[in-house]
Amino acid sequence: MDYGLRSMSVNGYIVSMTNWFPDVTERHGPMYRAIADALAEDIAAGRIASGTRLPTHRDLAFRLKVTVGTITRAYAEAEKRGLIGGEVGRGTFVLSDTRSPSPDGSPWPPSVETPFINMTVCQPLGTDAERAVTATVTEIAASGQMGTLMGYGPHAGLMSHRIAAAQWMARQHGVETAPETVLITMGAQNATAIATATLTQPGDLVVTERLTYYGAKAVCSMLGLHLEGLAMDEEGLLPDAFESACRRLAPKLLYTVPTLQNPTTAIQPAPRRARITE
Image (cartoon, rainbow, N blue to C red):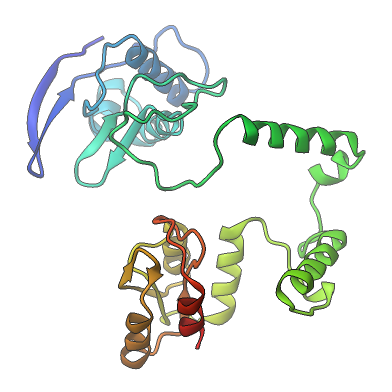
């Protein structure tokens, strides 16, 4: 295996590059996973230092005589484990090597020493969260409903869930609605796509905060919509910026997250929410 290091300038940065070449001859299973496993072992053994820039997808694919897609999957697997991170225009870099992996290979907890911050996820950490998840899964397993929950359900969601959602909306928000009009989605991304597709046509303009959830950008791209970022501060979207955009651009839709805005975690105070709504 070749671990030769050299330095080069990338967009004004001086970075260490490696001629890393994994030995996968004795490994079994999918090639992409074998490459990711080899990378994990070399990082853990200190043969590749944190901050080192890895070979490009095309270069490593050529040297291993595999497809570029295989390297892409291997790097994606390594990134999922918290081993590496990519930066547009700079390349793929090894993250901090001081973290202890969890049983599935992901870092737990994430190291505070890593120079990279993953802003694509927002999830609870720590033993309390683990206990809550364990208790919930145990309760589901003992309920006798596991078979039903593991199969395909109605497209609009289970009626029991739709009834509970309607009751919650009435109790928490004073919104009276029939369970038949409630749609249970497969997560926030599914809900965003459905709502956006319902309210827009291809070519329409959608406005949002200047820093916004990458999933919303993906939805707009998929639906052929134009996306415009608006000014914001530590409390989220600026009402004046939104009003100006309405006058100048006549957007069809505003996408905003008033509580724990992604990725900034900003929280809009009540007066600002009221002004934006007005």
